[in-house]
Length: 399
Image 1: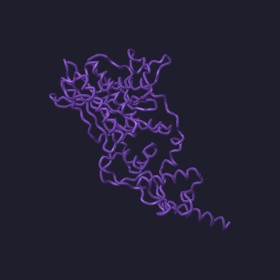
Image 2: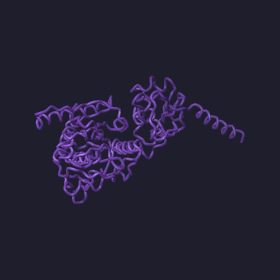
Image 3: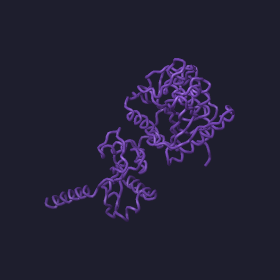
Image 4: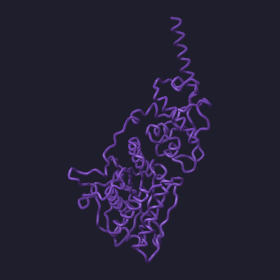
């Protein structure tokens, strides 16, 4: 009995000691960091439980942003390595799991996140998801792509009755996953213009171009996700598109009124599908967000593009789209030069979506000449074709 009591006391002492010697990794937010981009630096963003744990550890709401220069706890526990094994240090018995933890620490050192090997500085890192996201790690099933959701007859209802039949024209984009986000929607119509007594709502024209682009991409073999959706609009050939508020986000999610909540909802939806496809081994995934700008009535704006500073993939796509539009203008509007631009912007979607991303502004909705780009059906169709061509060039270019 005395020996048993001593053993129990020893075990309790070891548990307390282990608890005393564990802490969380801390990092400082830099200018432009969001929660997902911060977690991405430490290879943690692919698991939603890591994101949830970050908010819990830092006592934050999901709509809160990060403060430049402030320190935040990461969902990575730090253990004092005992010099014998990872399993005995952490208190696990799973050998394969220990190997994964070891590899994470090796990768962290190789990428410059840590200076020394854990064996040398006795600082072992244990990401939250290795012990608490088991369902996510083992989950590999991906729902059927919503935009590529043909009926038994081969029709795509989301495109409307006149465009529901989509015939493949190539397999250039086979294996590519593309997420299309049309700006605003639901309670927020976005920028507003006026023409011939009709209201022009940004969300309606951005959505129509998104639908047309989705159709073009599916024809080329891509897997396409329409993040913002409207079941009864379809592709419309009218010059003036009726403004409504019945859009929703993929998964029957009601679009919230609060802007931060809207942005979080969309990026979180993209990232959920991104994680699942990544686990399937799909390496090329891209987010495209489409808007219509609002500026002074007298200012003409050719189609222009944003990418996140430091995103090589986003920059390459934006530049290829720009080259494509410049080429098309030279053919179809040779009487005037193309003045579209490619610049960096610290926009929420560019920063917080896991895939490489590009942000597109189609026109100035208040300028009468730019409005022609929106209200003339053939122009909307041309926009979608040129965007599809530019994306195809960018995504199939051999480095």
